[in-house]
Amino acid sequence: MKEPLWKKLTPGSVILEPGSSAKFKTGSWRSMRPRWIEENCIQCLFCWIYCPDMSVIVEDGKRKDFNYDYCKGCGICALECPGKKGNKAIVMEKEGN
Image (tube, rainbow, N blue to C red; front, top):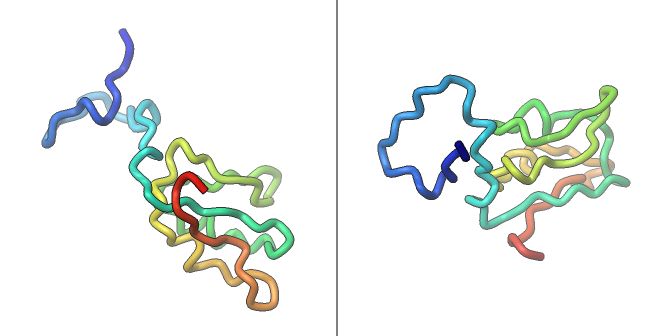
């Protein structure tokens, strides 16, 4: 049986299966999307620490990309990013740019 999309869930629905959130691609909720500027990244991993959706991909201890299937575009990663010499490594852009 195919899992329902989140848009088809009625408000107040109860999801009875624990750990099923991975089945629901919530990235379509966002209106803004983070863009990573690799040359400004100091690999502090603050974006990974603060991301409430675990949407920052880290491999071998280094930040690699975003998982846009689950990123809701909250902008916390961009807010917490110190960047290199004051130049942010994450900026928020309108979705679709």
